[in-house]
Image: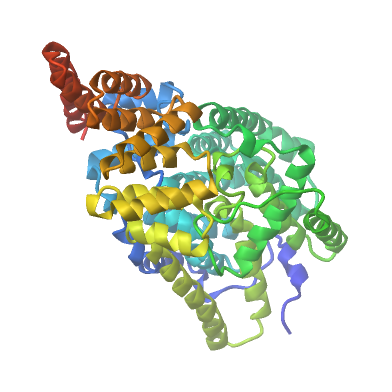
Length: 560
């Protein structure tokens, strides 16, 4: 007879159903081989959107730049100093070649899957090896692994799982050294990405699942410093999102009721994508959250009904409720209660469920190996191979969209025709080739039709028009962009180029000066400024700006 589902309660001294993958060396070999094979299409992928904000910028590639990464808030897009230090080291190793960053991400993801198996074995969860493989190959993880920017996910998860392992050892032996190591690793996770702040709460859920209760002195008191660290760094990250990244304004003007409706829908969305990973999109359509639409209330009401049902079921098995609590709790930072800049484009993204999906993976693997326990080994092997093979094929297909930047954006547009960001970014890519100006202009115009206040698209459209024989229309577009966002340095630079093209040299010089003031680390701005000064006969000033541009390039080369 198959082992009943109540066996998922688990106790350390009871043998749990095993998967053929549960041998430790098999897990290690299988995970690394499978991940590399599944992600082959992405290995030679190019840099894509936002990667330039994470791969170390030229002005941060020196030792002083490393100091700034740690001690100057705003030097990097987000204050994740351990992550940006890792990128700093990687840039020393392989410079601006994407291959090294992709291999690092694949290695970190495979390592996280292996560590996940070790955590599950420590907790005596059935099917640890199968869980590691499901996580390693699940297509909802592709965005986190194939997108270089999301090394913050893979790196932080490695620290998260190492901290969990160390803390579980502390829980068993109560040695101060284990606690100190676990705390250091938890800080490492927080300094890589603060969504890992949910770890202390996750540990309490795990303890409740194992023992059926939580003790104040044994379980809660040792984790109080962790909760303090998590709260402090989590709130700090939320402030950075608003202050330095722009997670504020009309796109985030949601009432508390709207945020509650949004949270309910987000949980169901990720739950559905995990169990039916079809039509995965880099940028999903942005929902309209309206309390007047009765059907939107079904998401939180349905969620509360599920919680109530699993609470009643806990006397038979605590596992489903524990998995739900872990899944939802780990999603908490991106449920809509805090502003996240990505909400500008969509309220959901595959990379936001990278860590939370571990709970569903563990439950799914445990159910599979428990259900297959009565069957012969060949049947168990075959059933698990079918599951893993399906996931591997889906991940291989999904990672193919990252092979080059044009494929990436065209795939996104095909899946989400209203993605104004993708039209703008693809247009900017095509505008690098003057023969493709008509295509680029059409894409910028489509982006603006979808989002009329998109100042980046206005700026890009203005420059493309000015350089393709329509200077007056281009200048008008650029002036509109600057009126909407006077701090957009790209628009000031583009405006200067357009003005110089029609002989308005003094105005162009002023515009380049403003661009350099807003972002003093772009050599091309100083080059443009110098050329205009040269045309105006200001040789000394032109020499100065040419020297500034050259120095920025020298600094970047020395930092390689």
